Amino acid sequence: MRLLRRIVLALAVLVLAAVVIAALAPGLLAPADPLQTHVRDALLPPGPGHPFGTDQSGRDVYARVVHGAGRSLGIGVLATGLALVVGLVIGSLAGVSPRPVDAVLMRTNDVLMAFPEFLLALVVVAILGPGIANVAIGVTLAAIPVYVRLARAQTQVLRRAEHVEAARILGVGPFTAFRRHVAPGVLGALSVLATIGLGSSILAAAGLSFLGLGPTEPSPEWGLMLAGGRNVLGQAWWIAVFPGLAITLTVLAATFLGRTLRARAEGRSA
Figure 1: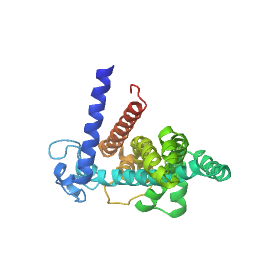
Figure 2: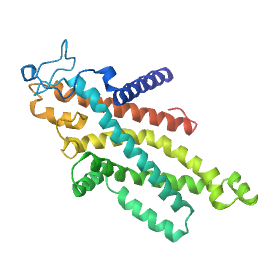
Figure 3: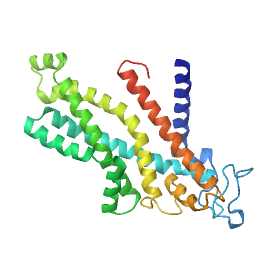
Figure 4: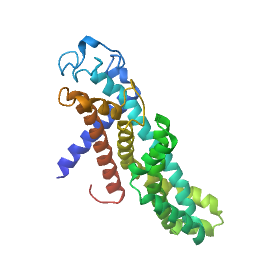
């Protein structure tokens, strides 16, 4: 089992590395123009010249999947990073605040956590309107409550740790003690959670794009491509299958890597 876990972990790292390369330098993997249309080549099945086939407009699906990694991964990384920062601030504030302030913050957080992340993101985007920026905002707001809860718990544990108490006895101020001895530990725990949360954010962003609330045509984006291929699934399965596989593999890889890191941080086997 240990060997199998190592193999799966290596595959997960390779998948994420490929996605990162596709996001940062898509031209290295797919030099073809993802927006170029060739009506005569419409709905070609996978084969030489078009390994993932072509869509209804004759655009190369492989090029669109590769170039779409930047938008899908970008939204996920941005939303996860912002949620981590906001969660760190609010959760740490709740962890060091008097009980009434802590109670108000955490009861509000509990209300938000009662809603599934995707549903909460959907409500936010429905209020703000469609668009890639609003999708990022919606996914961010939906992810924040999880980070708030963990940040609060870690803050309450670390602020009572012996080394923090020793620093306070030696005359270190509360803010300095928090910045030097508490915040790094909280940030470490949130970083591990963020690796798992990245997959959820990518999935939520793709789901919103699938519903038509994200980027619009002809932008290459995985969720949008998946939506574009659903009506011709029986005739041209490759239009929806390959972006769907890209979403699935990326989410699984990020989730497995995150759970492995969390298990190692807790001192147990993944």
